[in-house]
Amino acid sequence: MLLIADSGSTKTSWRLLDAPNPHRDFSTIGYNPHYIPTNEIHKSLSDVLLPQLGFAPQLVKQVYFYGAGCSSDRENKTVRDALNRVFPSADNEVDHDMLAAARAGSRNEPGIVCILGTGSNTCAYDGEKIVDNVPSLGFIIGDEGSGAHIGRILTKAYFYRELPEDLHKKFYKQYELTKNDYIGEVYKEGIPSRYVAQFSRFCADNREHPFIQDLLRQNFREFLVRHVLKYEKCHELPIHYIGSVAFYYRDILEGEMAKLDLNPGRFIKNPLDGLTAFHQNSEK
Image (cartoon, rainbow, N blue to C red):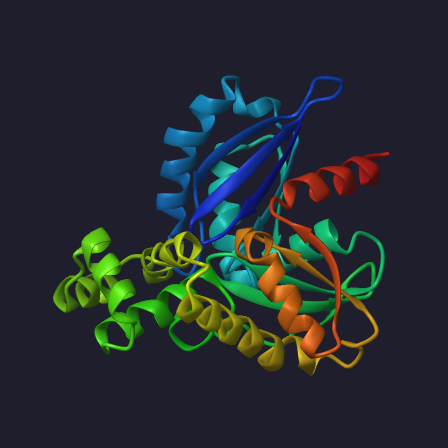
């Protein structure tokens, strides 16, 4: 049995491959090792994932875990140690979610790959490995283009009284958000990007409003200029996108790409589909 995990800061999507049976999908919270230590990852896997699997974990022989925050040996060990305790008979491999995106989006061809979900990241991929990566500076400093960045721009406009009156009233009616509540959630222990990203849904619900349209265009243009345009062959290679933000705002994102003479590639909401094909072919 082969288990593949695609973990963001918000949730982890799991897929079990057990040929010739159809694949099965599961879900748990995200396991970003910057925020969650080994013991908490182990407890969550034991309490939430194993009951969903419904069989002895010793039957799993291979786990490929791709995760946000899994960008160094130290962070990877945090997750691997938990997996080794939960799946003692498996060969447990941990790597960055950027590699998962590259394999799922660009497959075996060169391209530029972008993650746009709760957070954001990019890389240049030669068809086998990542060859360049404009650094992602995370929620507090970076994450341009992401759901968290959209939520941050929106909430700042709300508190700074920059929203048009109709949007301000609608936002207040929906959330009744106070400064103290907002600051308390952002700065308390936990995953602030997940909290702030929830407000990006307001933009999705009001995406036809001219103010929201402009906000989204500026968000994606900042992402493209600060990240994608930094790659040497950005005007030659296809640019693939992984994640719900890119998937649902594809029209706006493609409009900003056209202004910069960039070539859109695949837009994939769920990278597990591409990863399934990749690992099934690798096993042959």
